[in-house]
Image (tube, rainbow, N blue to C red; front, side):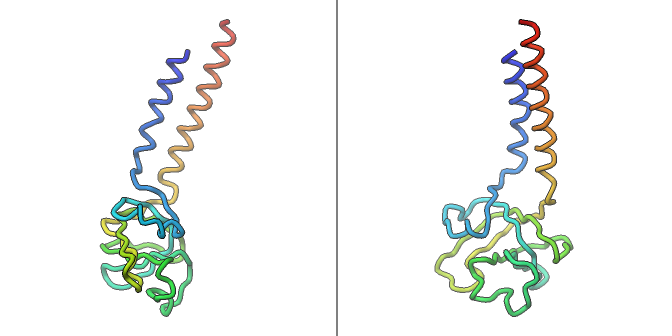
Length: 148
């Protein structure tokens, strides 16, 4: 019986590696341990030019606030072409984070090799598989107890 439980765990384990990026928040940016790491962060995109975007922690920023020195800890410069996104809703951006603590402008935090992750791409799959694992364990436990 126990070996079936371990098999279920091994089947569920690959879901953890679907997304290798470390999920962080804008408050986590102060931790320089994320420098050079692949991260995923949720925010609001603001287009600066054809291949430069700003990912900010706040929705509905006016153009005077996007790229402002006062917001350097809550904005990340995104390099690369991104697909057209709705600028009114939050998105999860995954990419390589670079931290330059000596900069005093918005370029302190930069992300490259980015992609947009659908908000419910990973959690839905993990939730369904997790639910299936829990139900399988409950059924297996009841069967095991009925046999003894």
